[in-house]
Image 1 (cartoon, rainbow, N blue to C red):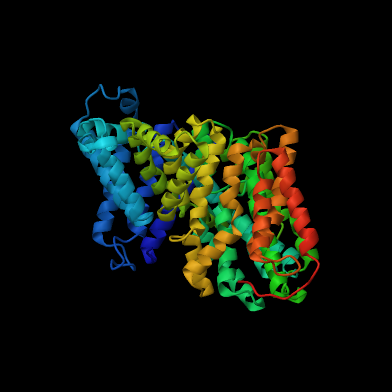
Image 2: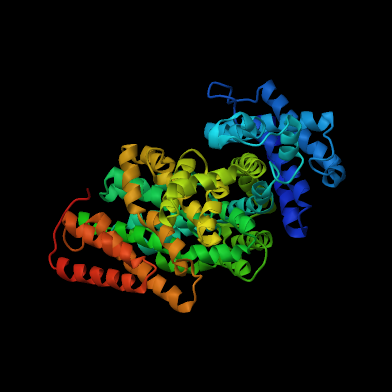
Length: 621
């Protein structure tokens, strides 16, 4: 990414602030009609891609070359045309009214510009996928066998991509335009007001002195930060530069320290209330209030982080590791005096659960963040600080916006060509009507997509391809969406391409793959719970009071069972067969059958009774 200087930086700063103010205005007073709002949003973001992201690693990074200014200017033309001719566009009849030469040229220009912006900002994998699906609409009828598609003219392809709400300007881009931007600005205000820093102090004060305290600080702070940032890798660099050296200092092996940070940072996107950008898209796909998605995701997220913290605790006991000294940490008393710093988050959650729109809830959260800063002389925000907060948040929009727009090409192609039905047929052909096998196949697709794409893009593509197959097999749609969402996220800690784990290993100075496999072990519940909630809706709090409570009890027992199995320690080291027994107990605890849950809990208790009698020292493997 370029580091702008001088007048260019000032111009860019004003441009981004103006964009943020526009989105704040529409969040407060209401969005424009969907196609127009999305056109304005993309038109504002596309030039940023060519100003900030060079064409290659060898291109100038100190200034913006002439050709990138040209591309930035060209990228605005399709959107400006949409704004000027909006009434004509929405009144035309798709596949009936012919395209004008101007529309054909601008639509082609937007497709090429967007794919190049995707390559620069998101990466080559998504650019290739978007280009393939765009090409498939035109060339698909030439492909052999099951891949053979319907025949469309070039004009029909461009029309579908550019002039309808089912291509580039479809639901994913709408989520970026309506929800993601305002939450990024909210994150900017949390940072500038000191709320983000307070999260770290809160985690330090209440976990730092415990066994393995720095690791627990990493888990708690990353859970709080990760939900807002929406990027596992960004979260690793944001909190890991502080927590990983602390973990190594008290004796954690480098690969374990890196794994803790990676698994904690990746999980931030499954932690309500914000959950990155993916959950907003999920709510739009399902046509349900965002509060329902937030409630459904709560228990799985708690189980995920509960298991990670418990394994960190066992690892500390296994190594004989102590926490930090109290004088190295913020005072609990002082931290509690500033508990009002969590008001923006409490306000956000309350408003979401009360049924207010995410945009209005985030706007109130922004006001609360500014308000609490006024109570702290060291963090009191001036109007200039507020403008800087808008800039800090809004400048991060290109990654999400471009990923959503490019994914819109794929979604549009799947809908137009019937590729989704072919994929469903592919799943059924391999699964042989066995639902569990279908889940395994969709899991593999989600993991593969997530290895090369940001979570938002991976989730959109996996949902477009995999959810219809799972729905036809009888799985609840919300469970199916959460299933692909989870595996799009845990791909960040799944070798051979585990981006969060590799980022953490670069800080820890540990072998990347060893860090990745250790992170997989710590995040084991993220690989099991999605299968469980597809069969047991109690795990997403959607099965009535009794079943919800039994699911909760089974989930808590699974935390302990999987913790003992993965770390291999109770009060003494465990043999491999003993760890296997605990692993079986953990799986049984997550079964949808009450009898199986009871058997799992019983097996866990028996194991603890017989295998916790002796104490011993042992190092983490």
